[in-house]
Image (cartoon, rainbow, N blue to C red; front, side, top):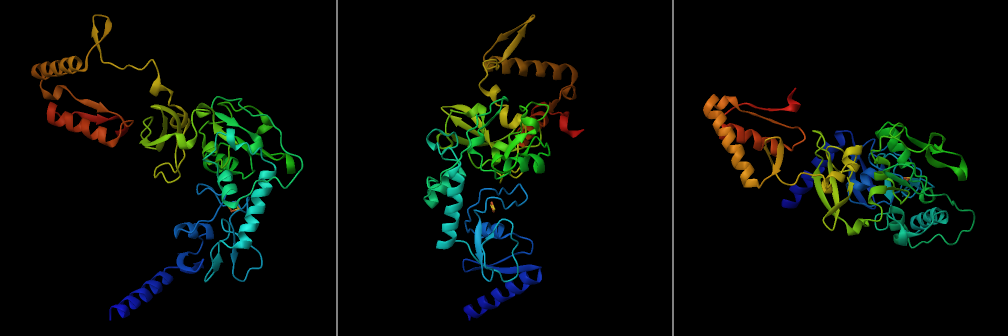
Length: 371
Ligand code: FES
């Protein structure tokens, strides 16, 4: 009886789902429903099937450049890229077998044949998609001989280091600059073997032609683009990542402070961050020097005459309480109030509001973001 009810529930579920413009496809024998315009890669990810890829980033339009995501589709005589192929009704897909693995291994081998393969000193070791795939597919690129890029490292700007020899021409940096940031700072330049992401006329990046948001660095799957400020300060596995909210404005972007030995050495963000999907501005990504600045005020200062004098916290808080009390005694509770800031978190703004209403017994509380 229980079994019959379950069967009925299942068939009702499928009927309802199919009537909502969903289609049924099968990936590695797993039947699933998806939207008509979903790509195979997107559906596979949703059901937990891993398909390797290098040129895909969910912030970007599908590109189909690296071909690492190839899969077999029943009835199609050649492999198809999962990132650009839309799912169709009753499609049957195989994402992993000997022949697919062989093709992927060949592709990785070709990429490595024009790559420095200097993982032992590369900044991205441990966090490089090409390195991880080479390990997974057991390839080293030594079979092919021929010309290799031998271009100098470019550090002609304050924030981004560019090692062209490590570029795999996946186009993620140029696409994110054009599709997401809409700055158009870099584009694929040159032809054939000489193709290369670069600025117009190979000019150095400056604030005139680049926003220095670092989105290109965030999407680069190899060590071609890295943050200059974090170079040599620890590989990704050496760094403790602390999730926090940016305090530069009220947008509330999420990011990770990458900390080593108690010092922030880098800022990263992931594409699952709800507010900013891994994107940051120049302040959020690179404006963290103030954290360890010698110029920071670390103790309260009390103004005595014309001078500010360092004080203990108790001393400063007592003075503030005393001044507020005497003001309210003289002019009434409504004579005091507080402004909070959209740079603070919701919790901090709530606390200030609570403090003013319950301690001052005043409703004079406001926030600069209200107007
Ligand atoms: Fe599909 Fe690169 S991820 S071709």
